[in-house]
Image (tube, rainbow over the protein chains, first blue to last red):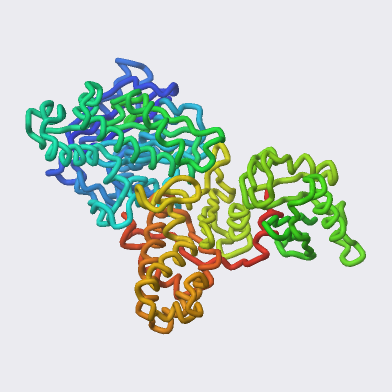
Length: 315
Length: 315
């Protein structure tokens, strides 16, 4: 038996067939097109799935073997398979399940991409075998997914799991969501880049600016970590501040939810042990019961395939 | 069948027998004594329970009918029935279950008092019939309990459920826990009183100071609400700021957990609809998906009996 997972992103749609060992046994992709009608979008996705199901290549790859189809979207979806809101694709209250099932009559599920990645890690990644986890992507924004008792917890009304919009500073930095002081403004890659630009404006001799060819607009998170590794004092200061912010975020998760494991993913997590070691040290003093056993904190182990695997696991 | 609940507080221990309709059918209390050995403390509690079990008064009140005994403590307890930490009673890694069961051989459970109150509300109070809830006591500090799928969620290591120590302001007001900027410092009754003292220091003509007989040390939360009802502009300003803080707290809970219901308890919640209406209005704009169905927000309906009823429900 196999399950189909679709990782629907702003530029491309990754589609894969996943076996019972949670491994991708066939994979394909199509570009995301927003300039065609929704029904044509679904036609292209289902055509790609049918193309993938070629029993001549692998006898497992037959439509009869497909038990379910799942999709991860960069937006909000409800339990009826309706995508409430997905700006990148121009979808609003879009009946994805209904349209899919007109074409392929299989159980169909859709969820937010961060929830999907959290599920993938908790079944096939670094948090495999745990019953509760909080997965956090440190990227352009902050994505997050909560797994409780092995299942995605997205709230009673389906609007939860948005760690990035917890308050980290009353009346703080304006956020794209309309509120001020959201955690995303202090813990995302974008936040680190903003802080770096502020610093190089007053410390133009920082190695960070050299790595960015003298152009503050070119600064990315990796440059800050690279300059820190080289001993640049401004990068060191930025690193400490950013790690402090992440530590406050993680301490809050421990104090409130105390999951079995906290998983860091997204672009910033590529800093690996440099970041992980510092964060593990930084968060602990801010936990109330810090003399008790604590959640593990780890870097996500799945990469691009998490989106397909997690989507295939939706149920 | 009946269950016994003990509400162990810093000054007194309330003990009750609870029937299958979750009603207290017999109740007694003893003072909390910290100057006697632990075994004597347990002797007194079990003696009080035995005194309560008088079949002559009510045939249900027999030791044979007792299915379990539960206790709520103002501290941290683990699933083995050990109270890890309970400053008010001078307990540290205290084997409450073990000592209890030496005297009365029944299943015994112990949990934090805020978790116990959350459970009581979710079974017999305003959140009865809901499957997920977050209960918050706005008092000297912030207590909280999370109910997920009808059960207390205290985390994988038993150290979660402490909403009051989520970060609300990076590098903010120092907290008794050792961290800075904890939510408790902005949303508790103590926080409101601190803000009121700051305001009357510069606005001594405020009605709040008059209600406190001119003594800032006498100010309590009720005086702020009373002065606001009378139109005092300083009280109005304080009320708005405090409600803003509560709104940010609630928006964070909705964004992260989206429970079916959020229940406000503790001393501040006695302000009733004055507070509730303002909070309901204040939090919504700060929720990301605020055009979707939202959690109910309500005032706790159980009062002192919540401690006994919730403790009796522990399992």
